[in-house]
Length: 180
Image (cartoon, rainbow, N blue to C red):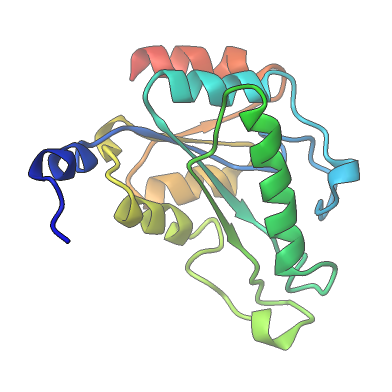
């Protein structure tokens, strides 16, 4: 079945993106978080994602999840938590366009996850994968993280990175969107 050429052109319109780290940016960082019952949104996080959506940006999550390699939880647990997050955001009219995670770690206990992956920050693999999957205007996109490895990953992918110092995420994001 052929696609309408007009809708195909619309599908290719480039949009900027915000790449969010998860733990420490969208939610309080409790080590190896995978349980909904322990999830706590950072102040202003839901509103920040909505502001990103309302500004016409893609909203992506890129998160290292070495707890899988360490044998602390499964990939299915990550999917369940991300699905729950998506539902919570949807209840407020917000959305994450894609969740990317890296379950690998070179010191992992689980052999099939024990290696140095290009997707594990500070490597840029997750960001680069999203840049290839979506029509992203990289020149107007940026990363928000809470660790130097987040900023290094952004820079390695050719994007600016902004270190979130804590506080209200919406208040942190709004000036960045205004400058985009």
